[in-house]
Amino acid sequence: MSAKCIDIGFLEEKSSWLLHPRFFPSKIGGKPAWLDLKNIPNPSQFTCKKCSDPLVFLCQVYAPFEESDSCFHRTIFVFICRNGSCCQLNSSDNFLILRCQLPRKNDYYSFEPYEENEQENFPMDKWSKLCNLCGLKGPSHCSKCKKVFYCSRKHQIIDWQKGHKEACSNLQQINEFCSNNFIVTEAGKSILFKEWELIVDEEDEEEAQNVDPNQEMEKLRKLIQEKKAGTMSNVSDSELEQYAGTLPEDKVFNKFTKRVARHPDQVLRYDRGGMPLWITGNTENCINHVPNCQYCDGERQFEFQIMPQLLNYLNVGIEVNSIDWGVLAIYTCKSSCDNGPVYKEEYVIKQDLTK
Ligand SMILES: [Zn+2]
Ligand SMILES: [Zn+2]
Ligand SMILES: [Zn+2]
Ligand SMILES: [Zn+2]
Image (cartoon, rainbow, N blue to C red; front, side):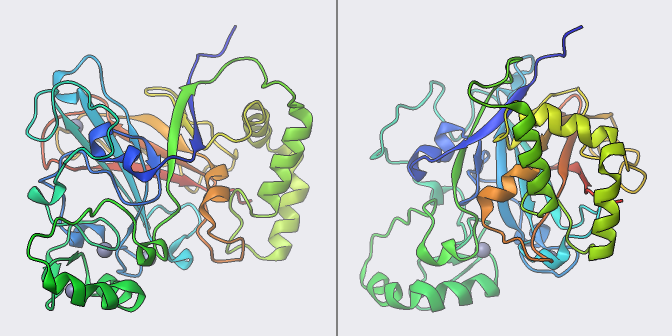
């Protein structure tokens, strides 16, 4: 009996302009490459439920449904609060998942794919003003130059202190100003995650060459135990020790490391309609009933999961109270309905590795 083939995601460095919305990227970090450019939700929807800070873009996965005309383009977006202290065990309150889809014929993009031309004129601010710092919708602007926009007062202050103070007086002289507000500024780097392309490909059955799965399994266990990949924040040392003692009995964890060891660098597993690869058998705290879609009342299904290895690429730190997760399992409306707002909220389960 062979396991069903699924897709897994890896990270690659890529020039920012190649991750522009017109190329329909899957990506990690930087600014969101919005799909629908006009109906971007208001910043109030991106407020952390725990600390009220603006959420920051984590990643997006481009995942069209071939069978549906309205899902010719389809992207799932993941946002997270940057404050590690808002990361609580088996709670996804510091996340926001949004789904957006467009037919092939739409107001924003050409019917045929774009050529990779850096100079192509694609004025995004024709559709929406975006925060100069983080790329969320920017309803307010700098009162001096009136040329850059912000999602929140907090981001306006950071941008002023870390760069716009100098740029502002120059901008005041310019009449024709077209902001390239997709590129991350120096100030933006202080709050956004490093930008990567997410390459999604079939998981092949064979182990990668030159990789010893047993060795990789040990490495992975060590990473997780050292909190470099996985989640042990907010757990006391004695609890950690207790946990380490129980490791061999956690069959789910063993299965997880074994499967992941084939391709240790994977940051995403995409298996629409399948089952998540849970990180632990201790599930009672987090795996609740997944609610139906609030727009069509239809069922949701599992679509993809974000792996703890992604934390290694984000430079979030390994100290207690840094951003952390075991797996993030994302569930979306099975029929990917068109009801409700253009950006539709979906559901995430955060499973942590705890006793
Ligand atoms: Zn928060
Ligand atoms: Zn912002
Ligand atoms: Zn200004
Ligand atoms: Zn629905």
